[in-house]
Image (tube, rainbow, N blue to C red; front, top):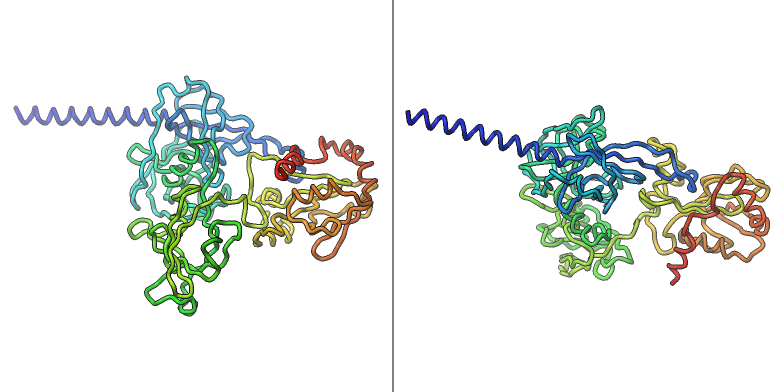
Length: 496
């Protein structure tokens, strides 16, 4: 009899546990959110206009402080955002509270507090070990109901994030992340251990997610509402796997490190490093010859991991070798500039800059413009644009200016077929960036404006005719303003 009672109690306990687990699971599902976004992106071929709005959907999860964690690309350029809870028919208006495009993460909120009723904020957990199972929650296209997919964590290392082409830690799982899944939480043990972000187009059932270390960094950055992003060390390195290069750098056989090939002059690193130095250790992590560090036992990733753990203003301890002599220092980490490359990476939630003079449309060269050629931009965009992507910017040439196209008028006769032309100088003044270009054009006192490229080809426009025909050109081509809003007010602020 006692044995039967014991068995009955065990069965009852099992049923109660199963019931509790079921309730826990249902409660968790209430915190998984479907996101509806109407996105109206700028038309970089006609920078005063917008492209046709697109309807997008994604996923998210309720976290602390009545916030919804999702991907930045789910809400990028969003003009109208709604959210919907699992099991509810009603949609609520949402707004973006904070966005980190480099980490492909965003925080939304809903001003109607009733939305968060009966939802439990999910908490951030720690990254599971390799080969552990995780669960991806989301709303992939093809249906309206919540989808739950299980996969195994197979790899953790630095990857390029497709959204903003940043280089950060990412987790890889053997589960497909389809459109609509983006922004959904990756769950382990009831905690968020990642945010689904992208899939591998060249392999089946391989998806990537933003790991807890990156999520935690963004949540900390978001506390004051001011985006600072991930700090930069301010240098470029190459691997030091060549025995000859290692000897030439003065390293012993038991030493490893990364060769520093470039130090940006406006970065804090310039006060410490020189090209030719060898980076040996960052924040206590020894740097291997392939530029990796062991971030967890028997797991390696790029040494940027040691930098990414910090915030702007932190002091980063480093150890390096110069001509065989070891040195130690601390780098005061600074916010990165918009781009170190001559072509600025893709930007979001911004209006394009442009300037029209004599019917010629001038714009800065950036990845938004290059990607306007579509998915095949690698082969369709002008070769000069693509070549410029591989060049570093410097003080004398921070940004390229392009004569995008000519709006035919009397003042620009002879140039009607000119397009995608990179400009080097205005009336003999070399142009450092688009703001300087616009200022030179706006303050011109000469009878003619002469534009040249690096090959010596030139475009000459009559200044008086350009000013006289400007209203007619804008009216003919239905352009609201001759330059982007705020262009010269921003220039005035820079001068102050």
